[in-house]
Image (cartoon, rainbow, N blue to C red; front, side, top):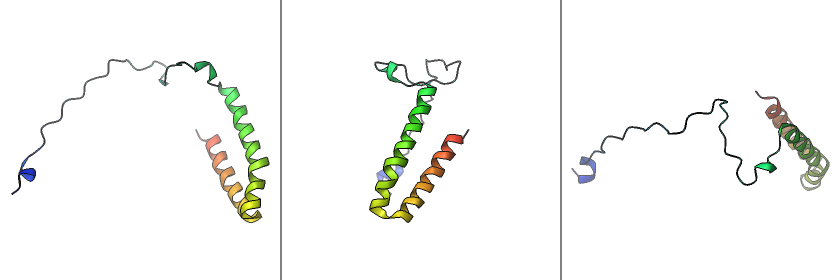
Length: 91
């Protein structure tokens, strides 16, 4: 029998409780930090999402259609649109 197979690992140390109490709001998250003022609120986040979708439809789909063809552009657009709709309506 080899020495490696004969040795057994020792017991694991017990987990220590964290010193920080959980947040009463349950969110936790990172502290604001240096660029906390740049973090958008919920309304700004929604408008950013709208602008990204418009950019994807008005710029992305014509580029995809030029590169892959109309059928693949429609398939990819429908797939990504369904994914985006599912993410937007998920709870």
